[in-house]
Length: 141
DNA sequence: GCCAACGTTGGC
DNA sequence: GCCAACGTTGGC
Image 1 (tube, rainbow, N blue to C red):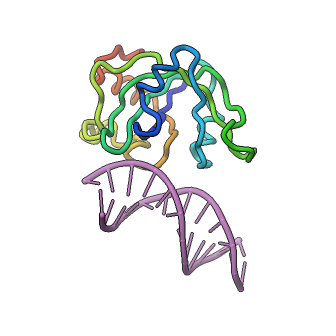
Image 2 (cartoon, rainbow, N blue to C red):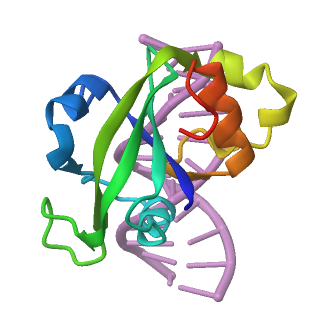
């Protein structure tokens, strides 16, 4: 299993919106960036991801699961763009802020820190476990 | 609201 | 194929 991070502006698509979709989940559509798309093409069903709120909040707020592998993005006819489907698994007990992440030397190589503009990105297993714990969740969430 | 960083586009 | 111009993202 691999780990990922999905970034969204809460005003466009929030964790609450994602939770409302329940187990049926929702397409992670609208991505128009090759690096982010390539990350989604590498995902397997069952992979886990962090749900991150950008802009005002700047925090990891929950855990999602990939429930459908890359397929054409239904919001465009342009066949360059694919997306996966994800469902919410559990909210963090406490959100883990970007400031906290930047304050941890062991997390300084995270893509979130290194390339803040990339909206879909890989997370290493070590990073995953550490941030889960910081969010009040089991390390093997 | 500003601006740095970065990705994309299009002219040459 | 290079690179200048432009647009967008997201942290501050």
